[in-house]
Structure formats: structure tokens, C-alpha cells
Image (cartoon, rainbow, N blue to C red; front, top):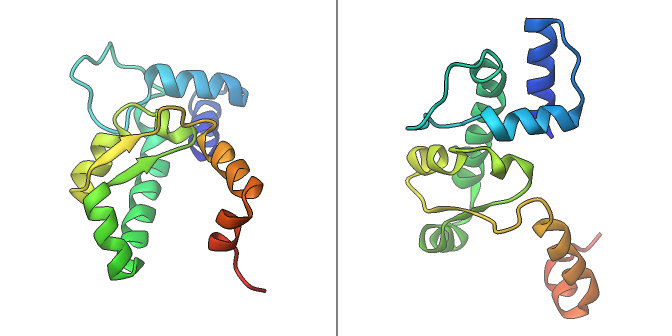
Length: 137
């Protein structure tokens, strides 16, 4: 969501064009990259500056989370790596950029757009799992 908004804002400011979220998502998937691609096409003005700020924010958020992670959980992350989910996971090169910045294994979920909601549904359907993740008020 953040990447789409940043891209739409960049297109509006730089080119005076208003685009919707769907078009911004299409542009992000077709042209965007968080990490330099070996097979880059001709330069596209919408590409770099629109994504640099939110991608940097993502990298910083991951670093902050890793710094605040308890040691026992950090060991699991080092062993198993990080799985990217959501629409941002579809940004080409984000996995490689995070790998370079964290030196951890980074995997993109098989179905990043729906995996979180499907997992949440499974937790809600299972009282055993729900008890393990629920916080007391």
C-alpha cells in the first residue's frame, strides 16, 4: 500500500498525472525494483525516485525489528530467515536488497497477497493457535 501511494504521488508531482492504486500497482510490478536488475529495460522516469523512500523505510523497519528482537527469536530468524508477504513482496529485487542489508535468508511467500489473511483465518478457526498468539487485555 505504501509503495503504491508513493508511486502515485511521484507520478502526480513529476508528471502532473493522476493514477489510481490499480495502475500504480501495475507500474510497480512491471517497472519497479528495490535492487538493480541485470536485465533492466530502457530508463523509465517513474521508476527510481518514487520507490526509493518507501523501500528505504522498509529496510529501516526490518533493521529496527531485528535490533529489538529477543535473542531466542533472533536465533530462529538467523536459522530460518525472513519471509516477505503483502504487495511489497512483489517488488522485484526487494528480497535481494534485504538479503544484502541484513545478511539473512529472504524468501518471498508463494502467494504474498493472500497468505497473511489466510493465516489469520486459520488462527481464528483454531482455539489452540488463537490461545498461543492472543494477548491478555
